[in-house]
Length: 277
Image 1 (spheres, rainbow, N blue to C red):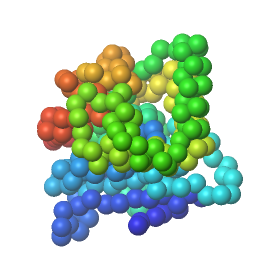
Image 2 (cartoon, rainbow, N blue to C red):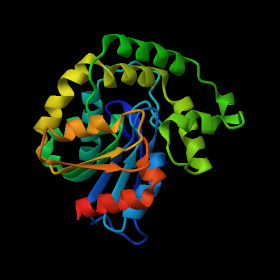
Image 3 (tube, rainbow, N blue to C red):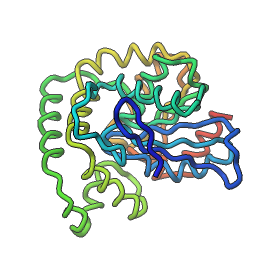
Image 4 (cartoon, one colour):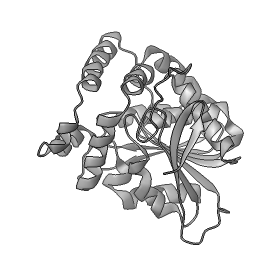
């Protein structure tokens, strides 16, 4: 298992390349969403490794990037996660990347592009957009999210159909059983502080105020993909973000929800390839 220490945390990372590749292709880095891991990007990376050296990693506190027992001087602000990505790339000697990110990870990606635009050739932001602030709704979401994060148990993995129930709100089309189980496992094993902290930072008044400005500041050619049926980040939020900047190309994928790369992989890959080519 490849690990690299980034700002005091051992981060899991892996390369997906074609057999015999020597690391001379352009690098495409993948950033996962809340309570997930790089695992759900593997099939997409496998399909794109004919043109790119694909770098996958687990963000701090998620997947296999476990937090140390000692307290760190790091917050769970999304800008901090963007800085983690910068240190990761620098530590691996990577100057420029194609950025491929999803959900909360796409917010990290948008921030990264505005913080370090010279490090990004092109970017794909999947299932992301601009929220409108509603204090009551946000407070209710944070309260509910706190309960969800607090009451997670390993025995959930043994409950029949638990994976289907857990993923029902995220999907419009079915995905493979092993993928559903991987999502449930990643959610259960995510670090409590990281999972809770990023709920508060990704869905917040601050995010509502700064993200429109960040989308407007993007100078890198960017593709924003929404799922037509997405209940987590509805497509209208993606359209709103794309309307702020002519550098952003917007595509709405029919009959998909929050994981279009898995629900309709063929169309997703076609859309991505047309953009990056």
